[in-house]
Structures are given as structure tokens and as C-alpha cells.
Length: 323
Image 1 (tube, rainbow, N blue to C red):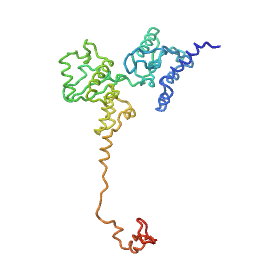
Image 2: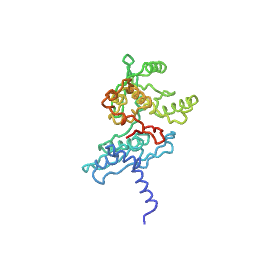
Image 3: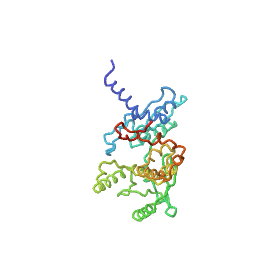
């Protein structure tokens, strides 16, 4: 008879290997994408993959994550054989918080790379994640900003993909003031905390929560809303659509590879729909009589057309005609 404790571990392992769950896995496949584990199954020789650190759990105390389980921390790591040769691999799991990597997930990848380096074997990493887009702004250094017209900033996204984004004059003015207050070298991040250490994503969320709490005293409806840094990104995309900006331009601005991703952001709001309705021509009301009413041959027998039917008691009935 199997040990009950061992059986519980087997069931728990099978559950964790489901990642974000059957529903999200099905959605991943419906989008034409392989799951994190399916990619590894195609890579390795049959029955050779040995997974590492499946049981790792994060220690974040952030309100969004505290007490929340993230199976495998959004990444599957391990070693197996490819053509009978050892290969280390990490595969991001998009079904778990969009494949974004936290401290525990990054630790899994770092441990894998250290082991591969010590053994002299190759490492493959399958990237399939939403990424931490806050970091694109937090990594900005003075040399990445063009302060002269046309003002813009050079951003580096996932996979070091590079793009230029325009800046509003107000933003440029604020950046100038920031650098005057806290001068930074050309290759140093502009945004730092009170200790002079580069600001992290958790610091941004902390400050945003403070501002939302203060704003809620003026706008009470904010208390029922979940405002995150990503909310600004989504709202900007919606406003760009409302302004009539082409979706391909919005895709470039957001740094997306596929238009399908951009379409999740670019939802038409109520004002956009109202303006679209107003662009439609209203039906014109002409005072000219229709041509058939001007043709007497059509109206030759008024007994059949327009003669109301009379009830035996003499009362005409609306809409009924003598036949």
C-alpha cells in the first residue's frame, strides 16, 4: 500500500505542473502557442528531463501577491538530454502571472545558469512573458533622453528590443528639474529612492498606493478601483484610440510584437463610440412628395386605396380598408 504522504506529494506535484490551471492552459493553446512544458517536451529526449525547484515559493508581502500561490514562480527549469548530451533549460510559463519573473523565479534561472557554467553545458531559455514593463522606465539614464526637439526617450524592452518614444514637453521639463535636483551620470538610472539607490518596481507600487489613497479623499470612487502602474499604460492606449491614432502606431508605442496583443489594450470607450455614431449621416426629411404619389395612374381607384372600412354601425376602423 502506497504511503499516504507520498501520494499527497504526487498529487501536489501534478497540480503545480498544471501552472495557471486547465483553463489558462487551454487559452494558451487556443492562441496557437505551446505551453512551457510542451516546449521542453519537444526539446528533450523522451523521459530525460529532470525539473528543478518546482516547490519554490515567493516571499513577497506586497498586497497583490501576499498569500497568493504562483506555481513554479512562472518558470520551469531543469536539465535533460538532447541527442544524449546534457542541456539546461528554463521555460517561462505565461499561464502564471503572464510569465513575469519575480525574485524566486529569477533565482531559479540564476541557479540553473550557475550549474551549466560549472559543468560546461549549454543553456536554453524560452521567453514567453508579459515582463515587468515598469522596468523600462526605471532603467532610463540621462543619455537615453533627447532634450532637444523632437524630444524622445530610447527604451529597452524584453530581449533588449529597442524603441524610441516621444515625450511631452511637460515630461521633459520635469526630467530637467529632476536632474537639477539629483544630478546623475550619463549611464546612471535617473530614478532613485531617498538613499540614492535605483528605484525598483516595488517602490513605484508603494508610491502609487500612497498617491491613490490621497486622491481617493477627493475622488471617493478610487477606493473601489485597483490602480496599478499598468493601469496608466492601458488608459493611455485607450486614449490614443479615442484620438484616432492608428492601431499599428499604438503597437509601436507600446512595444508589442503582434497586433493581437495591442488589441487587448485598444478597446473603444463610450466617447469613441458616441463620436463614431455622430459621424453617421442622419436620414434627411424631404418635403417633396414621393413619385408614386404624383402618378395618377397608380391612384386610379380610390375605392381600393385609402378608403377606410366602415363598421356596420358606421364607425371607421383605423388601418383597415375596404376590399
